[in-house]
Length: 528
Image (cartoon, rainbow, N blue to C red; front, side):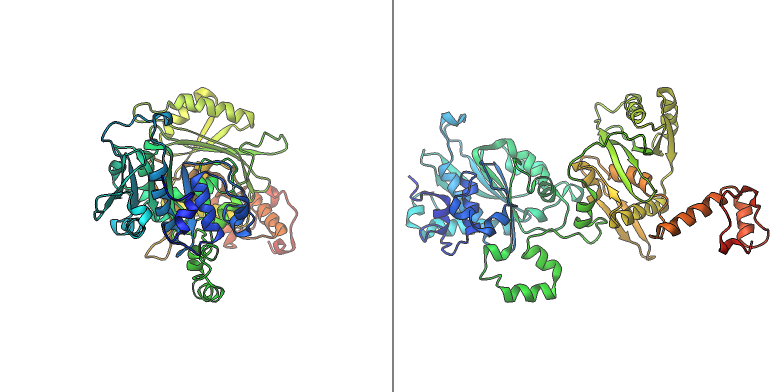
């Protein structure tokens, strides 16, 4: 029998992991790992409520995201939790497990490099060797990267340090009691290499025993990647499939994060203070859309806004066939400044079953009919073929030829609208991800260049591209509505002339032919 009644006791006891000064937040984390709930004595703490986003956990979840400030004992807590789970996991037939003789489940410590992963192992070995009560569960002597514990059933469970690997091959071939991804926010995302966190999780998720836990642990970093996606999708969402803790350093370790040190660091380095104490994500240097801007752009509820006969709509698509998504969207704008995406969707094919352009365009035509849209903007991919197919199914296709110059211009114009709060987008996770992966890179010439990052699943900011085609036009530098109206009237007049005539007019070589003018002269125009 384990001589500790709870994980909280194992963590705080001098005969366990010895964290005698554990704060209410640290103790609450123990309970959500053990059974998914938090005792009233701990939930009454305002710091605990803030760390869980104000939503009290109601049940055990097999995946836990622990985002905390640095020096907050988060790795120590998870090391204690892994020992607790290794000694309390249900290995009987009643759990649905068929354990063969000699089979040894495992606890894996995974990090970006072996040195970081060994830190959690050091906590485990130190507690096992230093405690009379825990020492008896250890089988043999610890090795450099592993230690074996004997479960009360007699089964041996291996706690092992492993390195990240392509497709997670180091995590397969055995049952898992627990997997700890230490410094998970800094692990590679899909666009940064084949060895990435998503692959590791997919390799191990179905191998975790009932009652086991996958831990994602670390301090927040850049606002992109697998951990950020988990956080943005599930933070403060009741019933989410992953329990998320976002705890400030001062709520976990108030001795280290004392008021004087916090004030000093905040004054010296705001970005470091934001991630290391406040446990908030910061924006990578090249990321075009900041976290704050993304929060403003995406509405909370309506995926689709129905057709309104009083409004005018436009549509665009970014075609794809196999791994790349075929995205489609409709927007409405009252003034060519403010844009609302009222409808968006995508179709996904594969290399073995590519999409049928005719089938997709038939569905596009039906959707457009509901919004009285007759023409869809599209990029140059299969442009001629799509125009012909579109004509057959009753929808016009207008190709947009993307160049490095106009792509940058359109995206920066859309970004300017977003900064002014002029974009309203639906809460589609894939669309948000596409905007996160947009990058702005300064070239040696000093000009900015927009990069569409391609992820492992074939996406290359598809939704963002079609929305740039719809929202990147007609950006005026004037916020004054009267000035914008004057410029629009001027554009209407200019449309009556050829480019050559306009050049001559602007140069003062010939007078305007006011027979084409549908607006009265202003004082500024009277000289003509």
